[in-house]
Length: 272
Ligand SMILES: [Fe+2]
Ligand SMILES: [Fe+2]
Image (cartoon, rainbow, N blue to C red):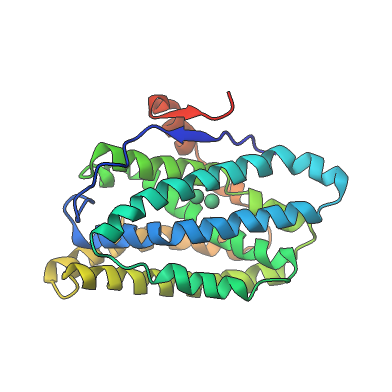
């Protein structure tokens, strides 16, 4: 079982930041803002899933998962808090979070349903975040145009997503979750996630008055499909989830560990 430290990020999130905080680029800022808008609600769902799954485990397995589950919940709870602060600035900039209420309404439909369904959805979403996290850590220079505190925030979140990417997946299997449902939820979660991400990014660009600018679309094309593009470089990793013998640890690298070791002054450890 993984040991997951909970870290308190030591960055200033009081001071407002520029509208195009992501290197002066409207598209990148809108895309990352959309992701951030989904985090407080989404990560609460991940916490609830893991908590429910843990409660359904037999006592001997609970012992095995206990520390990892506590670490997972601590990390996601910290991400929620930090991104809520970040999102507060977006609200002041006039952006409207339409994703969170839609997600909340969908989550209501999950009440009373077997925890394995919750965990399959969480494991699918954790696969996206793990891929994205790994890509961000690999190409951290793409965040060089951001204020250092914001670059730190995104890379810290990435490092922890990479660290805990197996937790929901392992719990799902420990509860007897099967391949068929894992894949069913992965397909649905992909469709729902990408549709919502696109809708919220467009909504952000519209409020920003940048939706119909040539520079916005040019940036989108190169950021998503260019040489190191987000979609272009990650499609294979996304497909790997369909393999019967897939496990998140197969996509392991030392990028997360390295970032955490090199940036110790950016955080303190909670509970030590
Ligand atoms: Fe997170
Ligand atoms: Fe996560």
